Image (tube, rainbow, N blue to C red; front, side, top):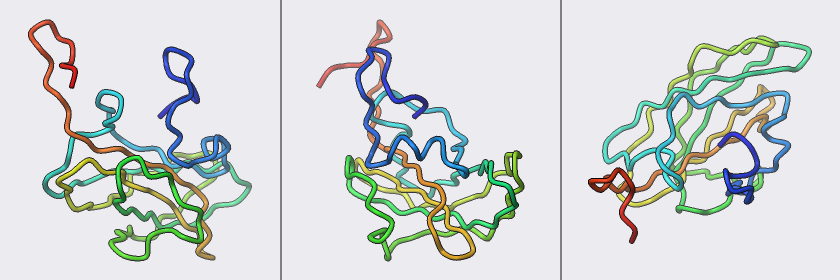
Length: 152
């Protein structure tokens, strides 16, 4: 998800996020190695233990709670007022110090059977969304004998 453009200088799928989200005072740092384009992770058919760090560059410490919910693949991140109310997984509160990366917060996310988008957000003590991110989960084609992916 790093950067605004892909290797060919085309805009990436920002998933409804605003580019300012990656430069906000508080950001989510997802602890995983992405799979090929369109699938940050392979379909988790069973529970997924996702580790999320929080980086904060505001003047004071904050306490946040991480939340996650599955949605339809490709669906843009909704405005804060319409975040999912059902199927939300939450972490314990995390204390976040300025200019330090937190230890990973853990979210135990249920598996999915079809391509989906995992919305992730952090809320502060006033229940305001202070950071947003997403992951796409999809079936990952095995490489062919030459190492390239098979085309559909």
